Structures are given as C-alpha cells and as structure tokens.
Length: 294
Image 1 (tube, rainbow, N blue to C red):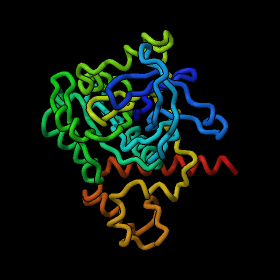
Image 2 (tube, one colour; image 1 turned 60 degrees about the vertical axis):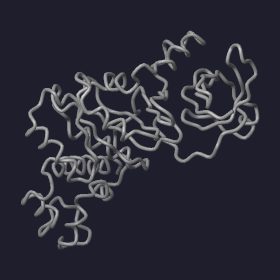
Image 3 (cartoon, helix red, strand yellow; image 1 turned 90 degrees about the vertical axis):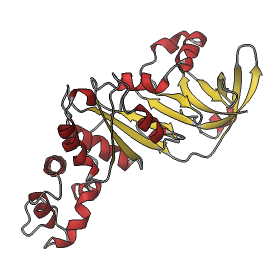
Image 4 (spheres, one colour; image 1 turned 135 degrees about the vertical axis):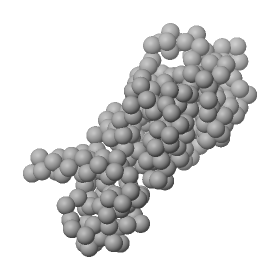
C-alpha cells in the first residue's frame, strides 16, 4: 500500500495511507544499510504487519521531487508565508528574509496577509501591491470571519505546502480553518504514542484534502542570510531585473553607484521603496558579515 509520511517520532513513522487510514511504521533495515533516512513528506510503500493496531513497515521510498533542508522535509511544492496585515503590522524586512530563504531552497512562494477584516480596503491594496509588483501571488484572508479561505484552499489544492510566519499573525487559526474537521492525525498519533502530545519540535504534515497537505513546522532554524554573497542578493529581487540594463555599470549593486536604473525606478515609483530599502539593509548586513570574516 502506498502512503505519505506525515510525522516521524523516535524511529516511528506515521503514514497517511491510500485507504485513508494512519499507520505506525518502522523503516526496514535496508534503509540504514544504504544510509537513507525517511523524511516527513516522503511518498512510500508499506507492508501491513498488524491490521488491528494499524502497524507496518516502510519497504520503499519513492524518488523525492525536492528536499527542504531546514527543516528536513521531502516533496514540498511551495511555501505559504503568513503575516498579519495589521495587529501586528507586517515586518517587511522579516518577510523578505522568508522569501529569500524559501527561494534559495527552490520553493515558489505565496504571501498571505491575514486579519483583513481590521484593515481598510485602500490600505490593504497598498500593502498587497508591494509584493504583487514583485511578481508574488498575494492573498488576503480573515481567519476570524473565514474570508478568503476558498481562494487559499484553491492555491493549495493538490500540493504539499510549507507554512511559515511570525507569531501573532493567526497562523494557527488559518491552519484550523484549512483543516476543518480533519484533525485525525494529531489525535491518532497521541493515542498511539504518548510523546505525540509533546512533539512541537517536530515537523508534521496535515492532510486537508485528497493529495493536499500543509506542513505545520515548529520554525525554521535560522533566518540569517550570512552565507549568501552580497552580489547575489539582487537576484532575489526580481523586480530589479527590467531596469538593470539602464545601469551605467554592469556590476552595479544598486547602492551607491551613479546612473543606476534600479534607483531611478525606485524614485519614480516603478519599484517599491519598501522593497528597495529592505534590499539596501540586507546588502549592508551581508557586507558587514563579509568584512568580519577577514
């Protein structure tokens, strides 16, 4: 039987199988011999050893489409970055760090601004336009009023999505809305293994519909960009690209150089000043980090 690993705890793997049931499985010894560790998100084949206690063994791991490094999860298709549009006000510098981190791992990103019910339409449009002009898909939701959930579900349909965002933005409320009544994973794991109730440090997948999963993660290990070369930073600001051929210098960093097409685009409003200011701050941060190495 085929299934997907939704959680791993202390050598046990919990498989959401094709029959809709949850099985507690161990990995066959051959995986240890071949130095292969099953990951949350792996599509696997299992053999059932105990139908009463819903136990089995993982016999095969199908080829991975992708591997998210931090945290280690397989077959993630995209990232959903959840921020509040107000209360708290969005930290755009933090959002840009999330975007860069996800894009470095090859993930497309959807931005979700929650709490739209407490913000005027004009102000919401101003904020969403910052990232829409950058080429990102931006959604407005209200978990409190369940507004925008149909559009969000449609964006997640058929994919496995990693959720990320700061505290206080309504991430848990959105997860609850997306789950609806599908809370069988957490309850079943807690019943099978007591530690399942106290495993907030573990990543897990939540099935919200057929072949559609979200990854509720305890957090990403670091939002530091210190291992990124400052010259590469502009590659993560796709809105710069159309204006770079107007720069006087081919190696223009868009910081202090004269006759810079990107800075001119910022001045005339073609590029968001919020995004550019974040870029300049991160560039100086990376520059300072490089200076400290030598």
